[in-house]
Image (cartoon, rainbow, N blue to C red; front, side):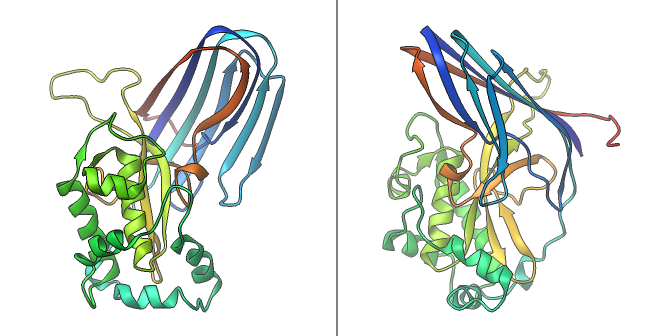
Length: 295
């Protein structure tokens, strides 16, 4: 599936901003299942400084400085991305989850060693016994890793309510567990915390989700979403994605931007400014299928 993706962030300020420094993680990531055909960044006012590099996790990072006084800053990331079908995974034939957890204690190869770094707490993912107990209701002795992970994905989808405004990025996962409410980043953090609490490697994935309008209505511009889900590491298959917000294994409608330990490693736009006073932020995302050639 080929998509044209546009992510626009618009800042409006009550008074002029004299200098704006912004760190961006908006460029889609190349992988075995995703080909980035083209990508560009359009910033108004034009940046005086602009640099790019790759972070520790392999994500593309862009840094820019705007030194022209402004009351509005518009950052638009525009990409064409090809998403390839995932493999047909037989969840029941994955190794027992205890075997994988045990292997993380003494990794025997480079891939396992790399995965083991995602077993620990991170700034937005605290690991506590109540999360471990929540996970163990699903991760029963001997249960295949991926089968249990899909079951936990379904539990979060069924037992929690998707509701904005009750949490923010700083809400601890234990609080999300108590509230039984939140948004995609909360549910991703929660499931990651549960997996790490029982010794399993899990990482946070940032990207976009193509949405569908109600039947009989046109799709609105900017109506698609930034989205978050997670991956768990399986020795035979590598990293396998799960989406607890939608109760599925991501396939053709998820576009990946990057991954890390938690939201903090892949925050799309962050920075600081001089001036501005009160401000408003508007974000619009479009993920539009296209029939254009990949070449």
